[in-house]
Amino acid sequence: MLIEKLVVSEKRADRFTLLFENGTKIKVSAGQIAEFNLYSGRELTDEEFSALREGIDRSLSKARALRMLGTRNLSAREVERRLITKGESADTARDTVEWLGKAGLVNDEEYAAGIVAYYSGKGYGAARIRSELFTRGIPRELWEDAFSGLKEPDEAANPYLEKKLKGSTDKEDIRKAVNSLCSRGFSYEEAKGIVRRHIENKEKINDNV
Image (cartoon, rainbow, N blue to C red; front, side, top):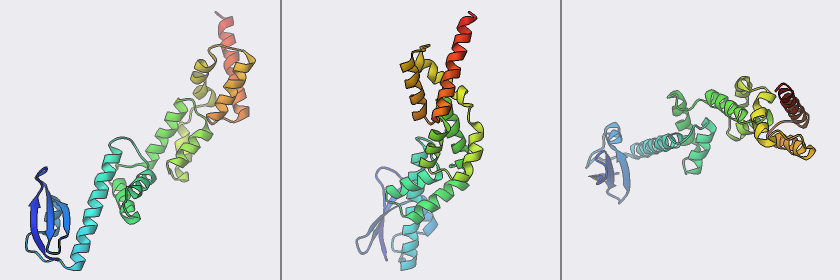
């Protein structure tokens, strides 16, 4: 395919549009012009044109992934899923994630540890945290190490119970507190024990005042 013209973007001096003899238009960066030795009048073979399109797709995918990571941390699987949703091919998305990993821009081990620390600190139990890790596509082989940062159940839940119970020992309030902890990822027996110890500790403190 013959490159008929190379047009500089009006918005960015490092962006160009390739106009081909058959009417095809492709947007490229200055780096891609240098990488593929592009210029007006150059004839590209089918193989060279395919390589150019693949290179552009990879660059766009990387740029898109970097924008995603600029707003929040994501797991490798989350990035891959989002890229595919945005229209990237599975191969391009996978290559992009591999590039991000090599660059240290996605790290599932650190991300998993952060999720455990965050949700544990917010008063959630192990079951809810496992669900979060699963939903975010964290490989199961990383879960055990991530859970080394899990707070003890009482330590995690007590700040939440302080707000939930507000010192109440009413049976209905206690029932609601237990059910609430269950919905936050604690087992029923675990939740009952946490609430019971929380109330006992509060009573001991009041007795000593």
